[in-house]
Every structure is written in structure tokens, then in C-alpha cells.
Length: 123
Image (tube, one colour):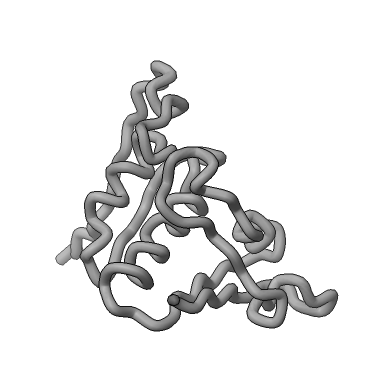
């Protein structure tokens, strides 16, 4: 008796629509993820360099400012990915808040750390 394993198959249009931003500075994939920002868990599947890190910034900021969370922690498997979570002036592109990380909470900056976490506190 063979047991089936669930799988996911994804096709991308590759028509350039993923590079256009809305009034909040979000690309199509980021906007779709942001629409689900109230969910406890999200699985974001998209191609490299499609804006997954920035999508997490948008969602974490909403959870901190609008959903009552006191802290957001982003855990990444590589320091190179963690570097994409440095301060980002999202309001420059239309979003209502900026992503800022105090250096003491950025565990991806250590020379001996191969992976790490970034913690951002609410206001």
C-alpha cells in the first residue's frame, strides 16, 4: 500500500506584473500576502528576488501596530538573507511605517552566526 505525499505545484506568468507596485509600495505577491496578514501562519512561495523579505516586513509591521503584538521575530537560515531585513524606509514608497531594527536585536550581524533572527518591537 503506497501512501501519497501532498505536494504543491506553482506556475508563474512571467509577464512583468510582479515588478509593478501599488499605492503602498507593494508588488503583486506582497499585496497578496498582506491581504492574509491576519492569519497566524503563512507559507509564502515565490521566485527568488520577488520580495518575500519585504512582504514579511509589511505583515510584521501590521501585526505590531494594528493587531496587538508586542514583538515580531523573523528567523532566517542564512546571514545573507538576514541582511535583507536591515532598516528599510517603506514610507518612502507609500507604506504607512518604516522597518527599523535596533542593532542589538539583529542577530545576523555577528561574525560567528551562520543563521539568526531579527526582532522588531512595537510602538
